[in-house]
Length: 207
Image (tube, rainbow, N blue to C red):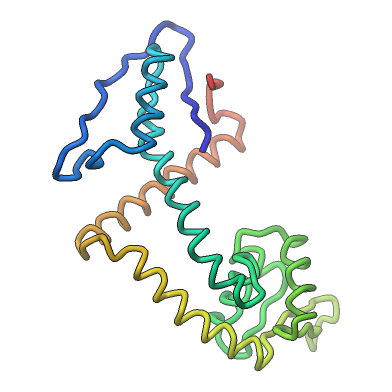
């Protein structure tokens, strides 16, 4: 996650006081590596507010840990996270468990070229087959084979067990609260992305 914060160019930013870690965990509990990064930036650039790093830095580090843990299961079965995502998208689509490259790209946030590359590998592994649309021969679908169906059903059960273990340190109420906050964060990120695409997404940043 980039350690950056926009400056207005009109003078020092009004920087809020650094939050103190508390035993109740409300401010993160014991100081961690991200706290140290924020502290260092406050010392090196007191004119900037590095507080977004406290949230987004932890989010990034949590994703890296999640990805490393989840990838162990995929790699043991000859897959990676992207291939798993394609297979699980086909599985949850319902019978006949097939989608076009465009549909898979939209569902998995991959480019059509990226989906095609993964389809090539999955087809060689016998996990999917390609078939043309009966009415429009230009449209090619990827469909789960019986082997692919059995593999993804088995992996899904193990994957969900892994995910439950990853969040076992949170109470049900915390999971619900965090889920709601992340939903709001995703909307905020989508708005920032839309603004950036329009060319009005920021004033420049200091690293």
